[in-house]
Structures are given as C-alpha cells and as structure tokens.
Image (cartoon, rainbow, N blue to C red; front, side, top):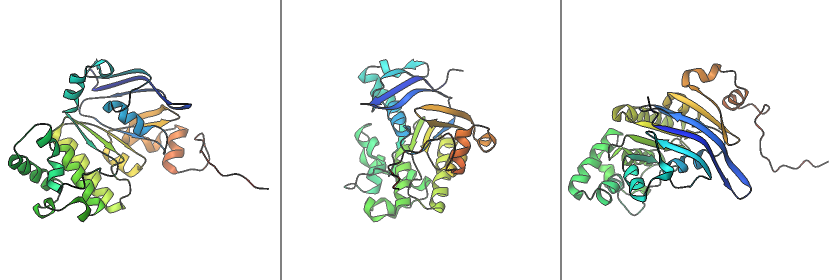
Length: 259
C-alpha cells in the first residue's frame, strides 16, 4: 500500500539554526498520526512544510506517491482543496460571524451560494455541539473552547480527506481538552480522513493517535502504535512523557549560575 505521506530526509534551517535535520516518516491512508515533541523542536515547521507554507531545503515529501515539492501552482492549489486545518489558537476571522468563519472556504474558494453555505455551516457547528444561536455571534463573544470547536467545524466544512491539527488543545482546561479530543477523533473517523496532529499534550496524543512519532533534535527518534508508547524502551520518549528533568533530552536554558 502506498502511504498517504512519505517524508524522506527532510531538512530545514533558518540561518544557523538547523530545525529539521533529516525527518523520515510514513503516514498511511485513514491513519491518525500524532507528532509529539517539546517546544522549539520543529513540529510546527514540519506541518508548514507539509502544507507548502515553508519550502524545505532538501529531501522529499510525497503524497500518494507523488512528490509535492515538484508540483505546479495549480496542482498545489488543487491539493489544498482536500485539506482541512485547525491552526494553533483557532485563527478565526474577528470581523466575521461564527457561521461565516465556518463557511469561509465554501463561499470564497468553492463560490457556493451564501444561503447554501450557511446551511452547511450550521450542520457542521451542530456536529461539534454548537447551536444556531452561536452561529450569529462573533468569535470575541464566545469562549476559547468554543472557538476551537468553530475552528474544527471550519476544517471539516468541505469534507476533506486530510486533516492537520496544530496544538488543538493548547491553552484549554482538561475538560475542554477532552471534548476537543473526542470531537477530533470522531471527525476523523466520520470523514475516513488521514490526520496529522502536532502536540506536546500526551493525553491528546494517546486519545487522538493511532500511531505516535516523537520529534527531537530535528529527527524522528521513535514511532509506533499509540498503545505502546508508555511501555517503549526509548529513553527520549520516556523522559518526555514522564516529564523527567534528567535524560538524553537537553534543555535549552538561559539560566546562568552565579557563584
């Protein structure tokens, strides 16, 4: 079976900072892959490389066996039509109503009639547990947890077969985080989508992921089934998931010891 995504030796630097130093990873069709790692390890950079927002320095990214780094602008735009993204912090448009945020791609990319687009938006909001009354509000009038639900409704509005989630539970309390995790899992299953989530939240990783990959020092240091992560013998994984202060993971710090 040809993987949905095949990443081979992906490298990306910004000046003297080498962020991705040879990432190798396969993600299969219909799979929910979670990429974990600490802050500054390159998770968001990797996701942006997959979206084509950042150009890699070297390596290859194949989708369904085709190298997306060699695609034309038209092919790139067509590929993005089948991708839904939940950005970190939701990234809703403040000037639009909730339903208009959800329907944004339907109206502006698919040129759908606003009345029809609104009906789809209401259906997607209902799917994530939000009522029609919320649809008429602005993002500033709803809570952070509700904004994250709106962002998810927007991501699934076009029925995409690929979903990307960038720190979907960041800044949420444990209860709202669990709600979002459940919604993500259900949305992925309902769409039969391939999903890639980046997070440092292990509760999310265990709940959302079929498989989990750990990114450290610009490389994937472990990848395996989600249910095996707690018992794996990889020292990087064990230090990360247990929050241990000592181990192979070196912490960047600005603290200076004063005698």
